Structures are given as structure tokens and as C-alpha cells.
Length: 588
Ligand code: FES
Image (tube, rainbow, N blue to C red; front, side, top):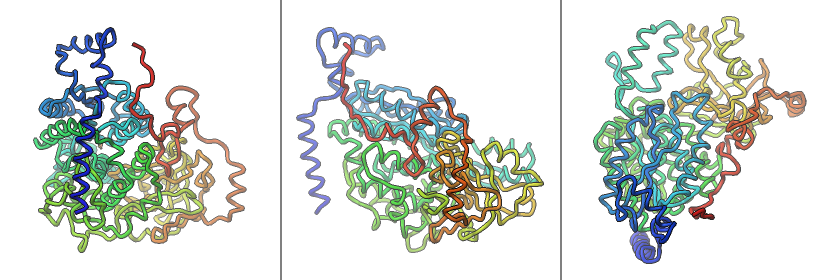
């Protein structure tokens, strides 16, 4: 009954909006005199008659296509499908580029530029005659950066993800990005040759799309679907599957109606929608990067989300998806098993069912008719793959503002562990010494890497899952406790404590850790402690010296001056919230 009255209210609201709402683009194309001449005339140089764009919903297609972002290299084709849908629904599509972030090629790390792209997106949307926008996202940072930027404008917006690659096939085995870490360890231990590595490279990336495991890109696509920002099934349709294009076409059609209904991001991104995303992320064993990006998105749309909410909201949610790196299967398998709708159906009793999705309907409509076709891939809540799911937030005197760990990717035996610290002052120090035969380390040691946080590196790279020292690999050691103020690839695994906040470069306690200090990790009690007195910590902090490089110009200067700590989402303080869609001054 509540659902019905909600739907009825929505219909009344839509009719009212359609009567009252003037198209934003009419401020450009609907003008008379010199201004209207200029706005329309230059559009006509593309061979477009005025009736195509005047008086119709103008829909921007924000495209992160780039040959330097291989995961998104098929986006021109995807954009064509979106355009067909927009035309079919009576809108006018305009495709525009923004900076694209290819995880594999960009140096020093794509995360450094997430906030920059979000600014590019925000200003591109606001500055142009757009009534609605379709975000084409794929590789890790392209999703959060586009959503963050769009939130700060808050016009009708829909996300179309690019889809994952087909499952890799190597020597009769299924492989994906998680195997890169395994191959690398095998090569370092002498079990895999350079030639075999070269063959595996081609076998893994055998189709268009992003990483085929539940890494950060897939996690972001799931987040999008669980928030209600995409049509159902968006997260898991493989990039190479023709149904990906159908989804893009349907999304193009839908955004035109969203403009007519004036269904904005702020109508969809409620606190309850964020809870749904956290619950779903726990169930699928999503990347630790989920936390940092969701916090940043919440900050833009004005939802008060904290790092502690991730723990409390996902309490009791078990692991329902058997996907690498926490499990066995790949994104392609997830789609054939029923996709995210089937996962959300399992979570139905936990979810906020009435949050509105881009469809204009309750999110429960996205999954209520779905089915699971393979219980090897998607489990029931009654019989999950692992009781430990979600992302655990630990606190203590080594991370006063928190740090994160993914239990489903960690070793049970190391969840409660105390060991002596082996400290690397920065990434160069780590690279120089990790395989040194003289390194004073054993399997009980705790590896600590400093100065890879937001300010320190800068940009918080994915280096937190440090390699196991070669001499321990040779002894058969496969996991150790590793702690850093950096991040880890969503495809990585191990007992890895990440995002330590405050970071070393901001004067956090991690900066004063010395070789031989005893560190205690207790995941069950959510604690990370260094066994030093408060007095000793304070005394060591007095003698701290700045050990990270500070940029004196350009974007990196802006970044280091303004980036917030990981537990706040590592956004720029001055980008929190939004400036809306109004253009305040007009030069014509
Ligand atoms: Fe693009 Fe993994 S490198 S998603």
C-alpha cells in the first residue's frame, strides 16, 4: 500500500514538474536576438538543424573513452547506443569528453587525479546547455570521479558502466587480474618464467572491458546499481555481450524521461540508498576502495556518512558472492548466475526497499523478479560462502581515525596477531629492501609502509599489499600482516591493513613506528595498536621530521594543500557539497 501511494505521489509530481519546469537548455537554445543566434548557429555547423536541439531535452554523454584507458576503449560504441536511445525518446544527445583515468598506465597513481576529474565533470556539466547527463564509466576511478562531479551539479543523471572483460583463459584455467599478484609471486619464487608471464598477459586480457574480478571497477559498478543510479543488471553484463549495448540504449531512453520527471541525483542518493550500497558491497566482497569513494560521493550530495557507518551497517551480512579475489569466480559468471538483482533479492530483508532508483520506482522493483541460476556463484543468506564479509574498520593508537581491512580476503590465522614491525620509510625504501636476503624479517613480522597516504605519496597509491619478502616466499609463506597509509588494488588479497589515518605525512602515529616495535592487530575486536606508552609516542612525535616531498606548483600543489584524510574520503575540502546547476553570469 505504501509502495502504491508513493508511486501515485511520484506520478502527480511528474505531471506537475512537466507543466512547470522549463528546460535548462532553453536558457541557451530558446533565446532570441544575438544570444540565441550565437548559441544555435555554431551548433548548426555540425550539420544539425535547430529543431533537433531546440525545445528538446538536451542530454550530455560524459565520455571517459580513451585509448590510454584500455578498460574504456570501447566507449565510443557504447555512446552510439546511448544516443540511439536518446533520439528514440525524443531527446538530443551531445557527447563530451572529460579526463580519463586508466588505472594501468597513469603515473604516479590514478587516485591522484580522481578529484581533478570530478572538477572537470562538474564544471563541464554546469557550464553547458544540458538538461540531463549520462555518465559512461568503467575503469576504477572513472566511476567515482564522474558521480562526484555530477552530484555537485545535481541534474538528472544516469550511469552506464562499460562492463567487465570476459574471463581470462590460461593453460586450461580461468584467470583474472587477481592472478597477476599470484603470477608475480610465482615468478619471484622461480616457479614461472618470463616467457610464461608473456603468454599469460594475452590470455588474461582477451576482450574489451574492465577487470573481470570483483576489483574496484566491478565494485564501483555494483555500487552504482545498488545506489539506484543505473538500470538493473548494469554492473555485471560483460563488456563484450550485446546486452551491454541494449542497456546503454535503454539508459539513453530513460534519461530523457528523467529530465521530464525532474528526477535528480539528490532524489536518489538518500541516506537509505547509501545503506543499500554498503549492504550490497558487503555481500559481494567488494574492494576496500569502496569506502573512500562512497565517502567522497556522500560528501558531495550532502549525506552525512562516516567511516564507522560501514561497520555498523554491514554487521551480520555474510559473503554471498563467490568471486575473486575473495572467492573463485568472475564477473561473467556473476551475470549468468543472475547478476546484482539476484544478490539484492537475497538481501531483500536487509535493504531499504523504497529508495527511488533512476527508473523512478522503488529499488525493490529492480530485483524482485530476479532469479539465481547458480548457487555456486550466489549463495543464500542462510548458507553463505563466508560469515566474514564487508570491510572491517579497525581503530587504536596506530590509527586514531581508523584503518580498513577486508576479512574475506585475509587469512583467518592472522586476524589476531602480534608481531615485530619491519618498517619501510617510503615506497623507494620498500622496493630497495623487500627482497634483501639480509632483511631482518620472519613470517611473524608485521610489514609497515609509511608515506603512501593522500598527502605523502601524494595520491595514495595501491601499494598496501606489499609483496612477501623473497626469502619467506621460498619458505612457502603466503600471507603476512601488512600495514600502510596507502590503498590496495581491489583485485589484491591478504591480511592487509590499509588507509591508516592520520597518515604519516599528516603526523599520524604510523610515522613514528620503528623496526622492532610490537604491533597488535585484532580484527575481531577491531583494534590496531602499537605497544608503546602514550608518553613514548608523544616523545617520538616531537622529533618527527618531514620526510615526504612537497610540490611547489601545479595540480599536485593544489592536491597536497587540500586533500583530506582517507577516513573522510580523500576529497578536497573545498569541493564538499555542490554549487547546483545555475549559471550565475552570462557573457553574451
Ligand atoms: Fe581498469 Fe582494472 S585496470 S578496471
